[in-house]
Image (cartoon, rainbow, N blue to C red; front, side, top):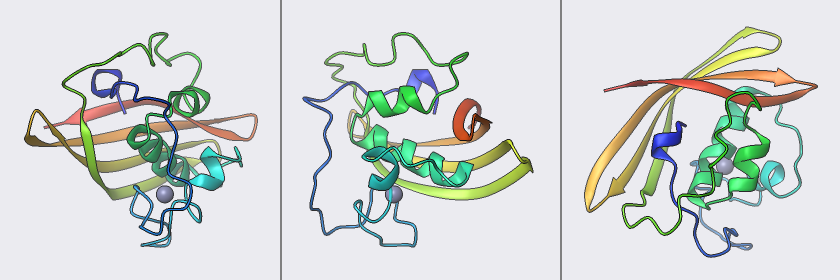
Length: 150
Ligand SMILES: [Zn+2]
């Protein structure tokens, strides 16, 4: 997701450890808990098998304000230097859900994921519709950039 939509850092940026609810990304498979889903990438830094799985984990990292993970999965050329400097932004978005529209493998090391992320900011519901581009570097998928739609 783009820098302009970066949520502010929360207290410690840690995720609930034993949640029985579905992963913030919706779960893969659907309804899977955080522990069974994105935690494998975010907590243990297991390499994502594909760009889609990485994209889901990055959405979850936004929900949990895990900027270390977002930085580690961002292409070094496009990662904003002030990623975690948003501070106590009162207009911090509250992420509500992720809907994957399309996952296209362009070649072995390049892929696109189209998604809609819903969030609330200042009490107003918004949606972020983006086609994200991903590149694999040394066996690890990274977010390169994204194109936003209205
Ligand atoms: Zn997940």
